[in-house]
Image 1 (cartoon, rainbow, N blue to C red):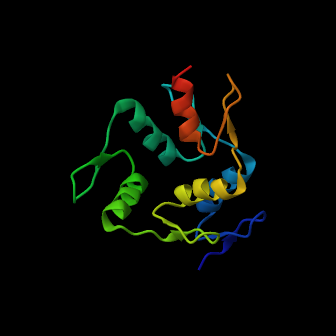
Image 2: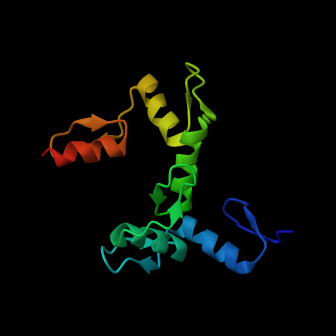
Length: 138
């Protein structure tokens, strides 16, 4: 039973604290700041995961190839690559992808959308990662 319901999106929680943490998504409150770079987070666990980028800590290991990852979600995405699982399918052309972000970027090839502009030269990209690689060349 989940008696605590969010008044903004109707998501329910077992306890008050779960609801309290969830509501930060709506308010934008980010009380957990990284001492290294100043980036802020709504959840303490997200800050801990972020700090691993600074420390280089990678506690999650793939049992198939022994590659290490800084968070569990990255490991899970990686494991889909090993299995060949591609659950995300483009409804326009039928092409399948292992990650939802890859499907989203692919769908932009159909729409022509390029939402990531370079602030230095104005060139636009379908992926933020492509913009970052481009910016290194400036």
